[in-house]
Length: 212
Image 1 (tube, rainbow, N blue to C red):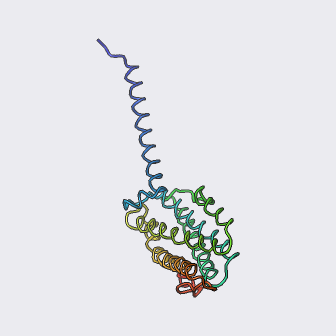
Image 2 (tube, rainbow, N blue to C red):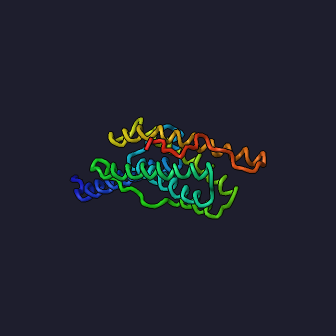
């Protein structure tokens, strides 16, 4: 008995749709695993799309949170904030240039995602010591995430130019992390000892770690 060709065609269409659906689910799962930090825990290299998105949002958050810090802080905290604005503006501009290459084909986010915006909004509601504590903690955790992101892409990223840029930028991010942890630890000591002045930040030179 002859098989119905229409049935075979329909089966082929359905099977193809299932494959496309699975492929889409895989792409989404990779993005979610990067966003939730699972890739970082497992040491998995981010996709180019995830790397560009996360790096751009990280820069935006560092710039905007540090602009808030300049409004509320003086001394070493303000010095640190100035350096974050300067350095992350530089990396933000570099990333935008790299993303224009046809081999990248990724749109660079121009606004914070929901989670970073929520964190920034909570900073706006904080004042005095509470603001400094929140800012220092966010800077330390944010730069820890950034170091992981850049390390993993520099090791196994898909795009050669972005891999080189990630590797070249990584030492500066590690230095930022060291400074942010110093700021956070100094703030914790200040609170525990209840002394008057905010302790100094490690290497508060105000000079860009990029040397310019």
